[in-house]
Length: 372
Image (tube, rainbow, N blue to C red; front, side, top):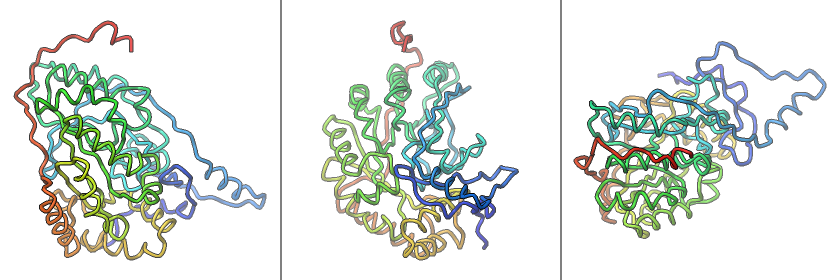
């Protein structure tokens, strides 16, 4: 079957890397009605523009007020019913991020804009409090940071995620967090008491232990060893912590699967999960451009394996296969994961949390807290 990748947007695919960014490509999104192509007018402007674009652009925070903060999930391959994402876009710059295409709905590029123009949902705390206090609300399994990281750099200043956890604590609502940031350690004072009552768990994403690979694959996330230290810190605080070895990319980080699981188990992880690379919409050309830039000798092999586990396509969005893939390679990877987790004593299902502790009447926010 032919690839579903938008072909017209490959115009800028040859541009180089930007230090500290996952991609240098401001790829046009799939809804755009105009396409642009660079043109050298003989005055050197094309070369100058390329040099300017390679200078690391700053991050712009765009504040947004939202009508709701809880997103429902109807996918059978995701083990939670509701999710909270306090930010849209992510400064970590992971080239493989399946959430990149969501920036298209904002008329922004899923490429460079996704990691430099971050939407902060500044009224998220108030929206969550109102939702949980609603007479019709019934507690459901809830995860924070399922699409974009709730502890990306801007959280240090805005503290939206911390405010959300405070509300969940007030309502005694169970929740899980997934992150690749050591920033979650800041909120141990809130999470640990809840964890003791089976109301909280944390999953730390560690796709690779190779620091050099991590710098080009997820350039502004914490280093792999720092994330391992975070797992250890959370575990010592009594917080159930799991490791996500995701996504598994053939011939890139896939050979490290067992080593990541072993290292995480050594420092206190009690569970693990892994998913395979997903390339929806604009992620496919972005990822392929990244491969050509950093791994040109492996690019064809990687994409051949991707096509093998995606039925000949760049991506397969079907619920039953999108997280695991299909075919021989996907089956072998699944077997490797199963054997490694069994050997290490790691559980492979999400920890069940206590939804029965939920209380609809929560303390009102203090006047002092409202000042911040």
